[in-house]
Amino acid sequence: MNKKVILISIDGMRPDGLIKCENPYVEKLKKMASYTFCARTVFPSVTLPCHISMFHSVPPERHGTTTNVYMPQVRPINGLFEQLKNADKVSAMYYGWEPLRDVSRPGSLTESGYTNAYSFEHTDAILTEKALSYIKVAKPDFVFLYMVETDEKGGHDNGWMSSVYLDYINRAIDNVKRVVEETNGEYSVIVTADHGGHDRAHGSNMDEDMTIPMFFYGPQFEAGKELSGVSILDIAPTIADIMGVPRAKEWEGKSLVGAAK
Figure 1 (cartoon, helix red, strand yellow):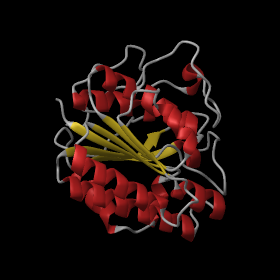
Figure 2 (cartoon, one colour):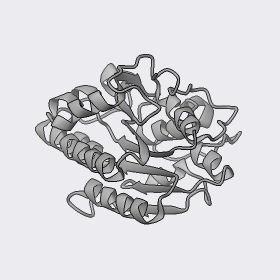
Figure 3 (cartoon, helix red, strand yellow):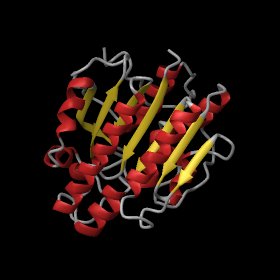
Figure 4 (cartoon, helix red, strand yellow):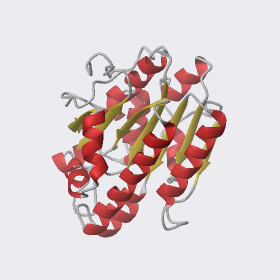
């Protein structure tokens, strides 16, 4: 298909939190995109293992990272960034949590930007601005935008489903709105969480930790269609299909391009 893609990961965003934040753009996304509020992440439901699975389409028992400390793969599997690099695509990544650098191998990114989540009051908005500025100038093929304040400042500091947590989700969705509106259909946009959370923690196999929302916006997806049976492992194959790039043979997830029509 050879379409450009932006992937937005909102850390720790529970589906019920997305609903209760009462941002009106959530309902608009449901009408514009194919979506699900009952996708499943991997266990352990921890940030780095979940994102390694998101980009490599295999569970933690295969890629080997089971905590927030990266473990080099014994039998390396190409992730999405590596597949894109091999296909001569230009990729960029903007993130607010430093260990996330390991979702890509050295040399697979053309541009990256890191801002510590506690350096500024609204890091997610700063990263969104940086990503959009680069998109407008360079028109990269793929952009990964990671928002961490929902998890760190919302969930861990104040508790999942607290008013502060819901406010950070609300702000994250405002950033999503900016990305969709300012790219004006030039990019397909996928919005996901990596995991949920409960109390002030996550990592268990509880539904509160394992259930995540996803939105798939673009011409490849039917507007207003609710999807079922979706896994975080499906994200990399779906993006590869949208962009006309081969999937790595080891990937276990499925493309949602056909399912979302």
